Amino acid sequence: MEEHNISTQDFSNYLQMGAILRFENNWHLYVHPFHSDKPLKSECFSIYTRDFFNSQTQLSYEVSTHWILTTSQIETLCLEFLRTLDPIPCFNAIQWQEPFQETFQISFTEIKRKISQRQIVKAVPIVFESAEGSISSGQRALMILQLLKAPSNLWVYGNWNNQSGVLGATPELLFELNSQKIFTMALAGTRPKIDQNRLPLLKDSKELQEHQLVVQDLVDCFSPFGGGEISGPSEIEYPTIFHLKTELKINLCEAIDPLKLIECLHPTAALGVSPRNYGFQWMQNLPDQKNRQIFGSPILYKIKENHWLCLVAIRNIIWDHHNIRLGAGCGIVESSLLDREWNELKAKRTFTKNMLGLGNKE
Image 1 (tube, one colour):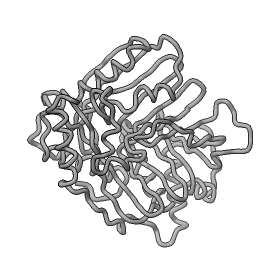
Image 2: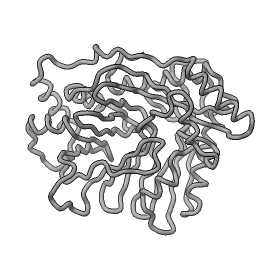
Image 3: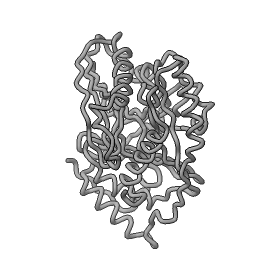
Image 4: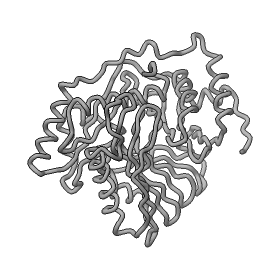
């Protein structure tokens, strides 16, 4: 691991405008200025983002300098920075407003109507908890400290400036593209640990149906590009929930632009609509859907030349200068039940709060 001489002021500046990614057991901290006047090396890191309903993926950060740190190095930097603050920041002042089940029911009912009319077989609405205020540099340091303990089957990610940002730990990879090899996954089907009456996911016909729709969607998307291997499904354990996961490895017939790959894939049936040829823009007319912003969207990282990592931005907190939001989504299929989906949404939000240190563990 390369040695870095990082002062508390360097780290303070980073917390004002920075980005983070945990990849292959290393922590990549992207250091401002992101848009540099100096010529950038061809192997420089870059980050691309988009809002969920937008049609284009934009270059957000072009990074000329970054740190690659160990967990202990970041922990030391966070603690040293927090010792400079008086008072020490906390999250007690955040007054969360939970979503309303009555509002979610409107989306649920409309999606079920489309399913009953055989227009679609699945759609994924979301809900948000929200609070007034913003996230300070000190609170970012606290959340990063918590994310250092995130399980290894989560990708920690985020980027921010003085006005807005996102920070989270996603279990979902859209794709990893390395030369002409792609690794991707179908992640759909959820069982909250707190619900002792639920069947194991591999025996739950509703969750298996939802999962298979995502698998088939990915197979259809990748079939023009090359063949590969499918492994799964298996039930994967996370701190408060279980998910079904199937892994796919594809050998491309020829090189592909990662931005074009995003256009082909986003949104998969895990976050959008099945069948995808029905379209997903209509979901903006459902309550709380239009303002998804980056939630459920791809975040694309250029790791090095010909090596790209694209994450799905879920299990996160999103903020601007006056509002904080924490979202979750659920897949609605023909056999979905309102109360069961509502409980799943709460379990996913609890997962996120625990990962970020935002609430008491349940």
